[in-house]
Image 1 (cartoon, one colour):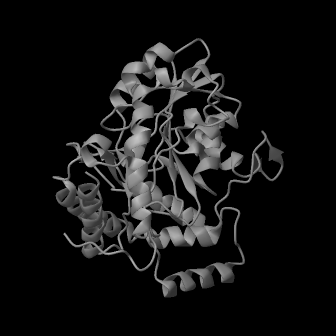
Image 2: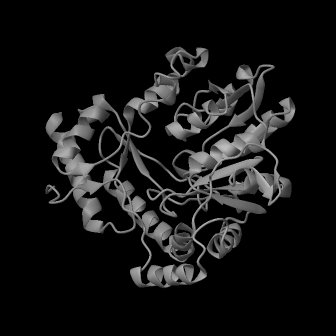
Length: 379
């Protein structure tokens, strides 16, 4: 099968962008209003439209997902210990540390890469205040089991839904599970506001606190009720978000097509395992990941990663290293390799391949041909 080196770097993603003329029109409106930030009309419109799109009872937007997650911990008044996953982006665990909360790492499921609910209860202590699962690569966690455990032990559930924009479980949005969900709107995500994030709530009081905390703790002109921060989204970013909401469903549909093509082309490649959709889940296809078996494929994940770069393909080793192996967390009792065997195994074999709506079928075909050729020549 023929395979050619890409003439330009082919990165794992490419941002969805609004039409330049449309964004210029929005900027003109913002300029005419003389309000660039501080909860202007664009932010208000975006929050309303996002609430409808995500089917959320209440929603607040923020300058980024990390700040949103940090403030979610404040809103839920979390303290002590929070059980979470080591297989995630650093921001998940850092949000706990910034709140002086001790992360307790729980191992993951081998098929979904999500927090394994079967191991949660053994980690609960008198200091545990919450469970913070992550919908990894947009695949929802076992929300029913997690909620049952939380209810039995009086714990809060805070979902990191950074990857799960628009995902539904049997017709119910992921935002309807747990106490709060955080969505990331970074430019690398399927939907973005350049930088940004959101929290969804079922409690109106939570939204009130969120809006205050993102604005220095200000409740009104004469009252600052608690230490807040500057977590506000500006009007230009909100305008980008408004325009991209009109494009995101087509983006998801194209990503679904590309994912299907990847799966078909790689399904008989020895040593390469692709993910499968679970019945009842409405996916958003944020990433396409493969598992690499060195014995069957001939190369390790790391070796394939290096070989792909020779072809100008820049895949990503998501998530490696594990958060539990970071210098700042590796001395925690829950971070030992023996306690996290599945997570440590998955972190060594998973590779995310390029995926975005601007990809051509020929791009996917070439990437798959390269992967097949590299594997066959190494055996």
